[in-house]
Length: 324
Image 1 (tube, helix red, strand yellow):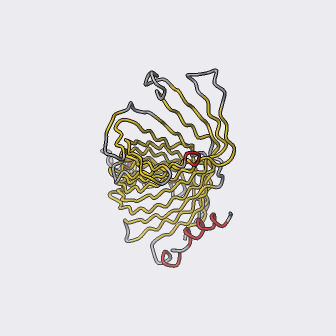
Image 2 (cartoon, one colour):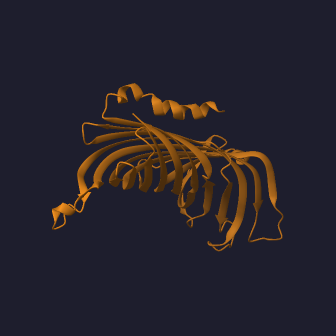
Image 3 (cartoon, one colour):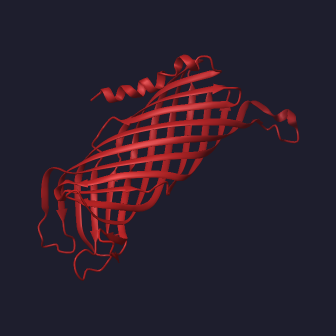
């Protein structure tokens, strides 16, 4: 099991011989925490296998998959050609118990109001997560605090500001095993719970996220560095497969680059000496996408339905790094 963590260190160091010829190379390893969830909803337009169409309310069903886990990240940063910088990183989870998966269904009984919660369940999850990212940035401008004042002698050369633009790409994959189902019926409280032990479902989700980033960095006395960046991805490719083992039902979805994402990143770095540094990092991201999912029962196509997803991810890291 621990072999999967080795790829973080390998991804951090495999470019090192090439990087040494560059102006500066940082290699770092981070431990941190991932918080958030991925939610998908279905409803609206249904197209059956015989091409007949009917409409339902939205959402008819909603599943929330928790992402909470401790994570490990490896990263390589390289400066070159004076104003250019390259970043490569890889990340995986250290703990696989990410919390309770929640499944909610509204208005599913005859004569039920469409906003009435009729079925609700919770299940245990085990999650595997892999993420990779690459980014190329260019320094647009470098300035000093006070240099634009009327008295240019007030410029403080110890406090520098850098403004950058970047082009990046994120890849993420999450695999869930769902087990130990506990289901009850809020609109019929006298009905007892249904419980099933063992594996009841699996869920796989994959994101491809190319993005454009704007950043500002502040450096003080070559000891302390802080950076704030915001990024936007106008096109996100989303794929998933939801497999309900109890009903032999598989529902794949491919939104075909019909999503978008908004991201923000903040870090504070302190250089312990010329080689070693520590860093605290915060990242947040929200992804939204919509399309249609197809459902196969016992291996036979049954229907398609409107499908929307929303993923909120928050990462907190403590980092130790070495500069060459």
